[in-house]
Length: 100
Length: 166
Image (cartoon, rainbow over all chains, first blue to last red):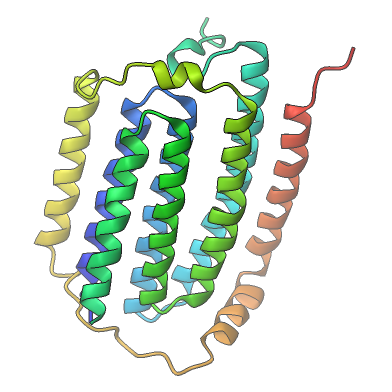
């Protein structure tokens, strides 16, 4: 049987990789994909703890995280399409319209 | 045997996650992300959460990645492919990430709370029935809220992506 901390370490690795994608890459699409990676690493933690402490709430929360992620991706990609239509750029640094 | 499978899936998911971040072409990133989600759903199977594994494949691989690929298809990513990607370009962010990773690893390996080797109680069958009872009895209100959020996101995405009138 796999010890619990293996799962936690895997989630930590995926979280750090996803955070690297969010902080270092400047392409909006890659940033959104890295956000998915972050949320997935958290899901691994939820389900692993729920399994090892025999609590269903881990899986329930993972289901809610997945649902909210789907909503977030739909909105984010809608904003992205509108953005590319108005200002044809994919770089995060170029989008400074809200800056005073 | 479980340990071998876990190591296999974990290594594959970490490698594909690195590909997501390091690939220059967004299409390659999307395909690597799809592979990563498949590995993670295999890890959910190892954790005896088959329902979550199926939801992961349906929602992430089936819906979200298709959405990403559609958007990549609709917008021009050729400029992004030509963009130079500097690995050392953002030094403070790199330092912050290394600190974050080291901190989390030290905390996980230090504490003895995570060294549980066996689940406290093994499941006694009929897991999905218990799960659905928990979801639809104790967590009914959050479930309804999530469905309203999904509806709002649906409407919002359509309104956002629509062409301006006139």
